[in-house]
Image 1: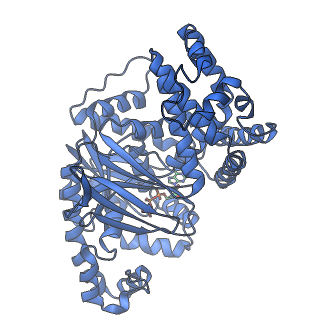
Image 2 (image 1 turned 180 degrees about the horizontal axis):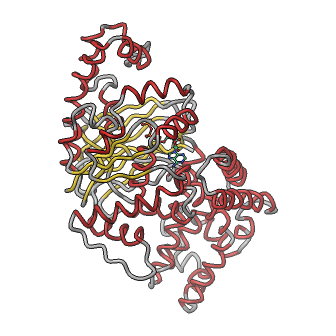
Length: 505
Ligand code: ATP
């Protein structure tokens, strides 16, 4: 597998470019993220840092106090060197281990200080994201609460752009608009696929992205494809955001396990499942498919007609809409696409508000559906001996039965569209990270200021264990269990590497 080291100066656009590669399905290893994980409580660097800097480096919750650590290394070169000598070998080892686990034509290894830390030899090619110094300063000042002088000091502490460019195999000049970056990433993507020996024939009228995505799919990458964050996604079509989520769900090589962090998400995911179930059986061809489609429709109706669903959907559409409003003023965001997306959220919320009565009310009054609902909880309760009217209905032509079910389903169209939109935006809001569950156990405390909605754990289909995820808005745990015949599953004793996505929007 080809390994591409991605680097660049502060504020040059490394993260932006990395996320765009990830949006094309390219596996990404993020050295900064690995460093963050390594200093977490109980992780490899944790005890070494306490040994070196003493207990004073700990916060009240026992985690390393990053602010204190930053102060210590900024005020003393010896401290900085000591910390680097702990972290760099561990990061290098982690990167190499992650590379071993990836099965894809190529991967991106994002190492901001690739040159400064002498890690250029870990990768086969170097991609430098380059921006003029003024742009680096302006973008960082706009993004972080820092002064131009502080950014200048960071620029001065890093190697110069000239040196970086002199060792680059490829350069992505990020000196234009935000929207200019994606075409450059797509061109590099095609180049790297081709260098990796993947044929990328481009038909007239077919975009590089289409071709590249299909090429990646054929190569069956072992890591999850993650969607870019909203500010990157917005310039692309809304359709592409939805398909990213669908890709995640439909990945042939991975299982995705989700933990909704609140009741609304739990219900929306349940509804999404039930709608898929109806659709699946509607595409079938036997009377058993028809019966299963009707059963799934009845179950859907039971959820949809709960009194709180309409309000929950409206509130969620409005909440996301308000969150997206902050992208209005961001440079580089395609305001047309953003405004279409926000219009869609507004119009769905308004249509729900304008719907008279409870959701699913009409269907509840349908005589046949209502009789079936009453027998829903009785095993085998819809037999001809109990429900001749149902047997008679099933005796019509197959096409007529399907048409009836589609008509009934049509009354849920707005609910389905709202659920799909909400879940696709939330699931597409962040990228996946590789994390390790030490001895099969992983725990994460969530930032209460972040609107976390769903935790997703992604494992290869052939993994011999499965995650049990539990928790809530503030903290969750993942325990990996191995099936044990028909006995209780047992927690695995080995470390388990998995992809984690904390979806927040
Ligand atoms: P650092 O390493 O300092 O964390 P970085 O190199 O990863 O930063 P990004 O975070 O990708 O840089 O970009 C810095 C900021 O500049 C972000 O807010 C990003 O949205 C914005 N940005 C990146 N490229 C452009 C561009 N071409 N035009 C406008 N804004 C940009």
